[in-house]
Length: 95
Image 1 (cartoon, one colour):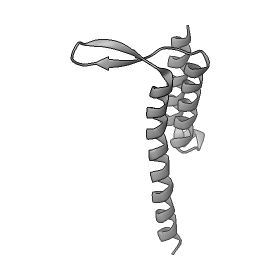
Image 2: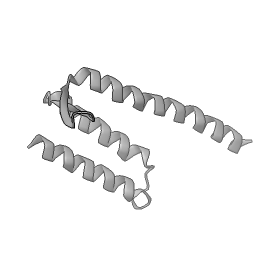
Image 3: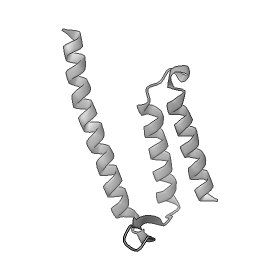
């Protein structure tokens, strides 16, 4: 049941990204909302998160906190990079 909700959130988020021009929003807005809602559902209902073991070709359950730290850390890295890059672009565009 919860997996179905997460898939629906993903599809809606993907459609939001695909129809960005019609919705008049940047791609970042639906992507961040999609990520926040999906991780919120996973953490609120304490769902099991899996990692793929390529050697044994099986799924291995992981603790939610370590997985969230990993993915939220990478998301934060991208956002901080984009803030800096867009600041430089806007400054150059201004002058």
